[in-house]
Image (cartoon, rainbow, N blue to C red; front, side, top):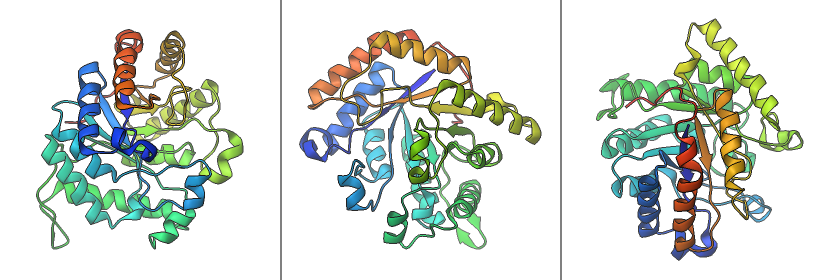
Length: 308
C-alpha cells in the first residue's frame, strides 16, 4: 500500500501557515522524508461561493502548487485528486501536465474526473451536460499530445518524461467511470460517499467495504472483457476518517486495520488528510502517521506501480 498526503491549501483561514510557497515546500519535503509516496491536490478553479460557504472548499491551482512541491523534493509523486479536464482546453491541459512531468523528472499521477458542480461549469463556460463525453475526448487528445511531437499540425513538444504519458487515474463510483478506467486509464479512484449525496455528487454512493468490493469485482470483470490484467490498474481510496474536513486523526491501529482490509480487496493506494491548526502541528502529525501507520502498512498489498 502506498500513501498520498493531501496538501492543505483549502486552509485559507490560516494562509500564512499552509498556503505559501514555503509552506508547500516544507510540507512536501516532510511527507517525502516520512515515507509518503505522493502529495495531492483537488481542482476547483471557480467553485460557487454558496457551495464553499455551505461546506465545500477552495484550492490553489493544482499544477502550479504541485510544481512548488516538485521543486522542493526529488522522489515523491505529484497527484491530482481530481483534475477536471472539461474546465480547460485539452491541449492547454496536456501542455501544463507535460511541463510538470518534464520539470519534475517524471513524477506526475494525473487523477481526473468528469466534474459535478454545475455552477462551476457555467462560470467557466464549460459543457456540463456532455461532461462525460468531453472527458473521454479530452483524455484521448491529451495522450495523443504526450505521445507525439505534433498532433494534426499542432506542435505539442516537449513530451513528458513518462511515456506514452503520465498514468491517468479515473475518478468516480459509477460503472461508466470504472469502464473508463479500464479503457483509458492506468488507475481507478472511487470515493467514499453516502448514497443520499449521489444526486449532488453525480456519482453513486459508496458506503461500505462491501460496496467497494462489488465495484472492484466489476472492474475485474471489465478488465477480463477488455483483455487487460486487472493487476495493471492501481486503485486509490481514502480510508474512513482521513478526509480534509476531519477534526482529528482516527486511532492509528484502526487505520492500519482499515488499510489492511482495503488492501485485501485490491486497493493499492490510500489518500489521507491530516488535521492541524498550524504548520508545526501538521509536521508533527506527518511524523506520527509515518511511525504509527506507514511503518505497518507500506508492505501491505502491492499492485501496479505508476509508469515512470
